[in-house]
Image (cartoon, rainbow over all chains, first blue to last red; front, side, top):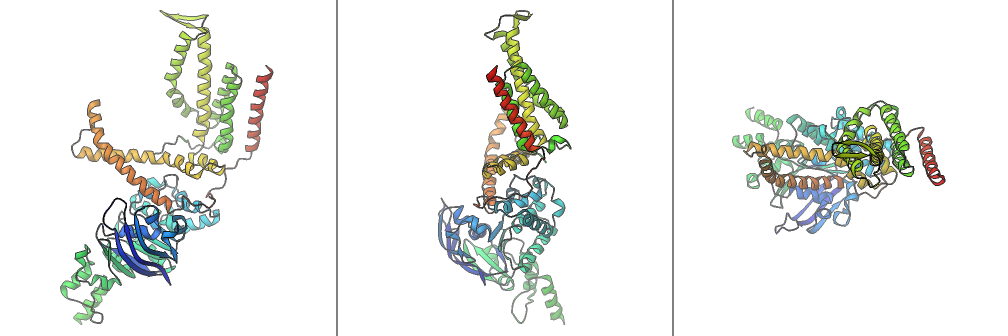
Amino acid sequence: MKKIVIKNLKYKYPLTEDLALKDISFQIDEGEFIGVIGQNGAGKSTLCQALVGLVPHFYKGAYGGKVLIDNIEVGESDINTLSTKVGIVFQNPFTQVTGSKLTVYEEIAFGLENFGLPQNEMRNRIDYSLELLDIYKFKDRNPFALSGGQMQRMAIASIIAMKPEIIVLDEPTSQLDPQGSEEVFKAIQNLCREKITVIMVEHKIEKIAKYSDRVMILSNGQLIDFDVPEKIFSRDDLEDYGVTAPAFTRICRGLKIKNKDTGLYPITIDEAYDLVVNQNE
Amino acid sequence: MKTLSLYQDRDSIIHKVDPISKLYYIGAAVLIPIILPTVSISFTCMLISILILTLGKVFKKVIPLVSFSFIILLSIIIIQGLFNKTNKTVFISLGSLTFYKEGLSYAFKICMRVINIICAFSILILTTKPSDIIEVLVRNGLSPRIGYVLSSVLQIIPQMVSTMDTIKDAQRSRGMETEGSLLMRMKAFIPLIGPVVMNSLISTRERAMALEVRGFNSKVKKSFLNEEFGYKYSIAIKITIILLLALAVIWRIIT
């Protein structure tokens, strides 16, 4: 079932001359984990905002094409309706804290209160999302007293608690240490198992290669490619779009070690190891 | 964690009283001395407020608040003691300055009322969490948007001050003089304004987006995570306060 359908999406921010998104079209299935990569200014964040309706409802500007979320057209809907379907986590965890709640537990409840959920349902969802992001031990802390990584996990928990069918994450691990990043990726992968569709903008290429079902390359507002990670990272022209392939892929490319069946380079250490061992045998 | 809240976390009977009852008390403590403008009534109200603050184990915390208004109260005493238009009876002469009984009595009454108002408001502010006050007000019809503004200000302003300190440190590390004479500090303030204002604007826009996607403008009736603040004697307190106010009005009419 197609969860997201984008047809010829074009967008230009107010008071700018160039299009931030140029005629983008793609489709995403339910439960897929999609990685979005590209250099700064490629249009990744704008695409994320278009998926949750911030473009064009929050940012005005010139908007064309169609974005369908579960057959709801974003341009004709509103952010409140869409926020029950799609959640977004932004890059900066500090600005995602509402500032009106004194504990992490209450902070996560903010969105649920706005949608009028009963208390029991709220508590169940908050407990679940706190456990999932491994921040239950911080539940009574002030949100501003958390570290950047803890705060980001709280921001993700706040969105997960709202049980959206789609989660958009715009560089959510930029403030996390390697262990924190791994935990977030694992938590998000668990969401995919529950049929939640995930779209994640990320610069940590190794993680994107490991966890994504498909990867999208954006450059200068255009969709360059959208395919399985092995195909994307085997492209010869990746660096033209400001993207570096995972380290194992680059090593294997240098050593000319390819999967003979597919003709593609490996993207993870396990795949690279298997290929090297097979070649030596 | 810094907030602008003056709330003192204590285990006391006053902390258990619901915020609406405390608001009723503030109303009565402010209105009764106005309806019955005698020194003894103002003094009694003030004593009751002090008693409640003591029961709430927060009396010491109200002293700095009263001290804060000390200069204003002192100036009222001096001006009224010297220049009140009803001044006739000399109370004391200090060199060329003569203080009159009528003026001092009037100033004393005003001071009593001011202290009484500070004490009455302190009962609410020192013994109730700001979030509880706002939640109760939103439950009773205050717009959730106004509630959000009131509650977020208490935490976001200290965060902005902290951001300003970070920017100041960054500027100082690049050689800017931020300390010294008043002129020096004023000069240092100008290059700080740009980054601080820009940073605040960007943060505000991002926070607005984050709130928007969490249903801030939802049309659905808002629910609350916590149970409504309940206090078993709440109705009795409110009825007593209303009766006292009615008595004060009747007293004023018949005397």
